[in-house]
Length: 92
Image (cartoon, rainbow, N blue to C red):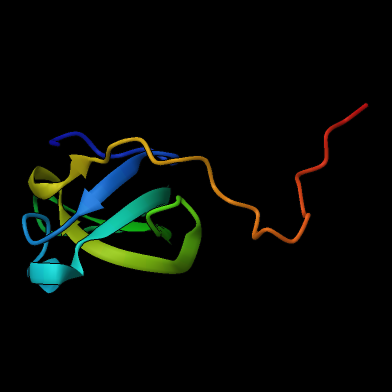
């Protein structure tokens, strides 16, 4: 990916994007904000949410990554609602 990601994009962040995510430390990451502060050429600060295999947000993170190493993530299953009977409200 060479263009800046946009809020809502679902990315795989692994060792290609930053050495801190090499090995088993890869993340599935939903972008919430692309920071506009100056960085090195080809790098960007992203704020967003780490998603588990079911698509549930598990942590909010800010990451510093190389644009060239970012990849679009495969589509995840819809998020679960915890099995507690909690469902999003639907307007009548």
